[in-house]
Length: 99
Image 1 (cartoon, rainbow, N blue to C red):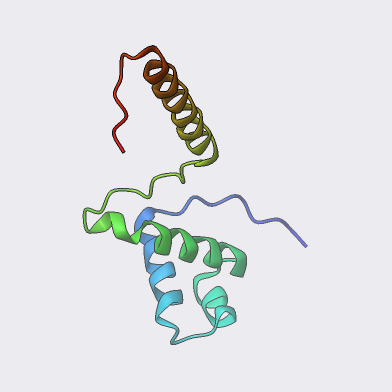
Image 2 (cartoon, rainbow, N blue to C red; image 1 turned 30 degrees about the horizontal axis):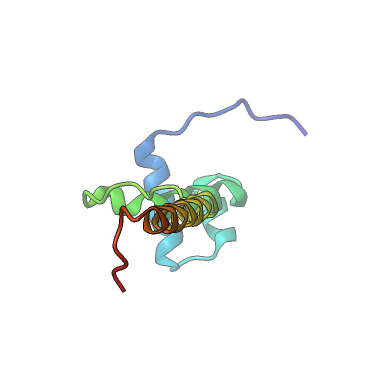
């Protein structure tokens, strides 16, 4: 079996194949033989199209999720410091109790 030389496909071709896969009129095997592309490649292009479809309509790209653990730790630390400072100022007579 001889190896086929590496092919570079245009963005228009990739979009055409991915759209055909999304439409679901043909099976993945049929699409693979029609376009002479490996089925895994069609799956990857389809995933990429679905992931980036929102950007076509001007939606901003999805932001990476924020790790809340350090933020919650900082909130806890600042709350503890505020409570300590309030207690110290109240004992020194510099702050009246507001509850």
